[in-house]
Structures are given as C-alpha cells and as structure tokens.
Length: 361
Image: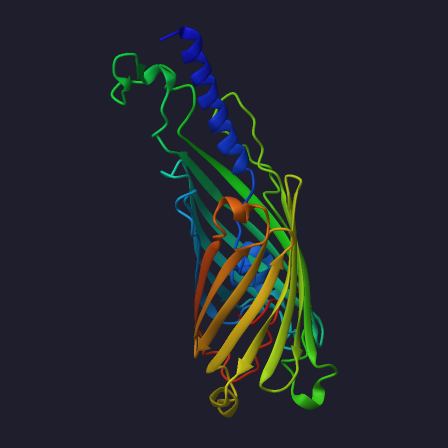
C-alpha cells in the first residue's frame, strides 16, 4: 500500500479522535434538569431537610444513527449545624452534603466513555422570614476513556484488507484514557410563602433563581500528553415560580439558560402538580400527578409525565426533535427517566418543610 495513502489514513484517524474530543468539550445534561438538582446548581444541597436518593437516565432512542447513554446516581444528605450559632434563636439555617456518580457513553461501539465522581457541600441562610440564600461548592474527578476499536492505516494489508491482528504502528502516540479534577460553585435565592400557614401568606406563589459555574478550574481533558484541551466553564442560570392556583392544583413555570464553549441553550416550559383527594385529606404528599411541557429553543420539545407515591417519585419524559436533525434521525429523540426516594428526618417531626428552591419534583 502506498505510504502516502497510509499517512493520510493515520492523519484522518487522529482528526477523528480530536473531533470526538471536541464534541465532549461540553458537559452532558438532562431534559428533566429540575429532577437532577446537583447537576443544575451545587447550592441545592443546602436546602433539603430529608435524605434522598435519585437516579436519572437518558438514552438516545435511534441506535441506527448513534448510541448515547447518560446515567446519574446521586444523594443529598441534610447536615445540622447548630454549632455555627451561639443562641437557640438562630434563624432557620440549613447545611447539606451531596454525592453523585454519572456515566456517559457515546459512539456506535462505545468510542468514548466518561465516568464522574462528585462531592458537594452547601449552606442555606435565612435572611428574612420568607427569604433564603444558599451557597454551594462541588468538586470531584472525571475519568474519560477512548474505545480501543479504531481501525488504523497501518493495520491494512493489500492481500487481506483490514487485519485487526496487526499491531498499529501509531500505538502509544495517544493515551486511551485521561483523568482530571473539576470544581464548581453555585448560589441560589428563593422566596417561599407556601411553607407558612394560610393566614401568614402574602402571595399565592413561591419563587427561586440561581446561578452556577461548573468546571471553574478549566481542567485539561486532552488524551494527548503534549496537547492542551481545556474544558470550558459551563454557566447556568435558572429560575421559576410555583403558583398555587387552588389547594389541589399548582403550576410550575421554569426557565434554564446555559452557556458553554460558545454554545447557548434555553429551556422554557411549565408543569402542573395535581394533588389527589387522598393527599389533601392526609395533609401531606401521598399521591400526586405531574405533567409538563418544555421547549428547548431551536432544538426540541419535551413532554413529561410522572407521579409521587408517598416518599417515591417517578417521571418519564421524551424529547421530540424540532430542528433539521429530525430529517436525519427519522424524527427520533431521547427518552429520560427520573426516580427519587426520600427518607424523612424524624427529628424534624411534623414541623413544616420550608424547602422549595426548585420544583417539588
């Protein structure tokens, strides 16, 4: 085989690796962003009063074009910090910790896999009767591995064609894996009137807004020892309302704006929470029905349906493509599932739950 042709193939393979790496210069994300709070803003770990465990899974449904899977397992653990305050009349402050593990796989044969381990610490401060501010820090390590099933030009034989038994002459020029640290920060503000008794309420809504910056240390994620490929900072802005239309019916309009590596994304939408008669009679969350619709501007529509059953919550969503991509992937989008189980803090007893920094689902 002509040496120039072999060299062209080798250069093409290197270009392919760099292209795959550039695609992964963006953090993965969930359509049900409100169901993956640690993935949305580290400050959320400072809000929860009960321990909870969550599982989020996202799958691209057109395996004929490409395979994509994203899964995260996370837990938020409330931390009591009375030692921070000198008197027993301290405001309603809360601290919390979070741990999360996620795995992302892309490519027809798993050409690139990402595994992340993250820890979170956050603290929420009551600045007034119905106003709270929370701050969060997150850090961890991300491991990325290339598949070893690339076909190199040096593995081509004139008589046999591609021969996988031939050891590629370019082996060793690029690592098959990389490991790097990542650090993130976030802050949240929320106004919460819903936790007070009816005669204390000033409005029929709760509100929240937050800002987060992920990968603030700009880690080098390159597979090549002599190459510098910094992971861009991922900025996220989110906000929303909970409008109490009736005691049975509440609306949750939400918005999320994210920016990373000059890529902008805007999600706008709303979901409804319907409290069943059984829930109202028990005066706590027993059985709720949830349904919502979002629009990822210029990309897709997202529909969600779910329910809560005592301390267990479940939601299923589907992304319907609204861009030119629908003609290339036969209109198929992505399916996403979220589940959460909460373990109530017995020390809290029947005291009201103040947390509403993100939609209750």
